[in-house]
Amino acid sequence: MSIHLGAQQGDIAERVLLPGDPLRAKFVAEHFLEEVYCYNEVRGMYGYTGLYKGIPVSVQGTGMGNPTMSIYATELIQDYGVKKLIRIGTCGAMQKELQVRDIVLAQAVSSDSNLMEKIFHGCNYAPTADYAMLSKAHQLAQEKQVNVFVGNIYNSDEFYRETLDRLHKFMEFGVLAVEMESAALYTLAAKYGVRALSILTVGSHLLTNERSSHQDSEKSFHDMVEVALHTILADE
Image 1 (cartoon, rainbow, N blue to C red):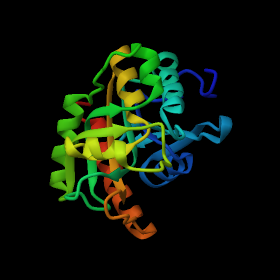
Image 2 (image 1 turned 120 degrees about the vertical axis):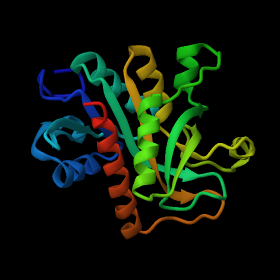
Image 3 (image 1 turned 180 degrees about the vertical axis):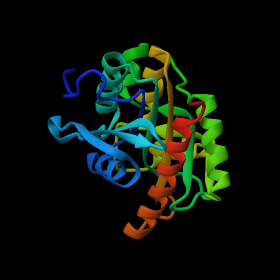
């Protein structure tokens, strides 16, 4: 066991999907995987392993924000030997061409996170996705005829903000969307030499204030999970 995960060695697959919401982890396990077992309930952050097309895949909740992502990603990689990690989550659109329910593949991540400041001591580091997984996910999304965008996203420690002034600068430079976990995931993947990707559904739009309905969210979530599962099994 690690500090925050109750799994034994061998309980967690080398391929892990990472939703922020632990109940989403449970949903994925129950609706997409076979022969499922729960390996973690510590702090209510559920983790499951099962089979997808006969190959072991795990799904682990991470909570919200870079600090919790860094905890779970580090322990999954260092303590359990995970080799591929795909974040499946939501984001807020920052460009007018994006619509609620679209899928965003995060090619790179800009961040205001203090976590990045602590790691790089004021220097700028550009966390990026694994190219092979990014390319495969894009191909699969197009084959499913899902509206998909690939590009830079903005990662922030701040969810509620008084103004969008800072975000407007990133909008000017074509940043697609904002979320709270991918900077930590990509940075740790680079540090430990593993592969990572963030696949995000647009749940809200910062320019129009539109939000997806529960029904629409479930449809786009299904599309995202299917793309993620096929991507994480590629080359197996």
